[in-house]
Image (cartoon, rainbow, N blue to C red; front, side):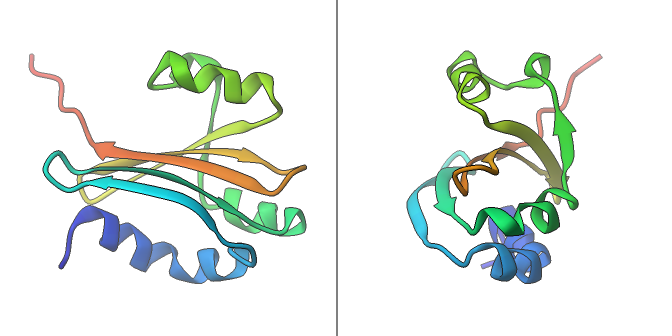
Length: 110
């Protein structure tokens, strides 16, 4: 299966193998609408290698108001886009937790 989720996971596999020295906390996928969300735990000392491959976001770029409390709890927001999908990673380097959200890239019509 070559969905954007698996394409992204293939590209980031090396980075994730280093970062994911912990475990997945939760994963939810909806293949009908091509969305995914979940969280995983990692060694806080490994956060720089993971976030170096992502673009940092500020609060105005969050997709949903429900994500704002993450920033108030010490998380930083990061973004990655590839193969028709975009990913948001909310990373707490101090606690070693990452919550992520994936959705299809929304094309704006003129």
